[in-house]
Length: 46
Image (cartoon, rainbow, N blue to C red; front, side, top):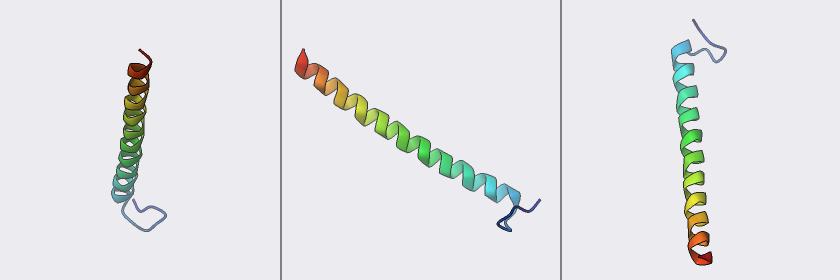
């Protein structure tokens, strides 16, 4: 199977997986820093 970009289908899938993993990692980082900020605000309020 050859995809639209002319690369083997497997390579396309791998690239998509890597991009998704990067996006998920960024989301987790954002959530993590958001949680840290939230906890900091809570500790200031308490």
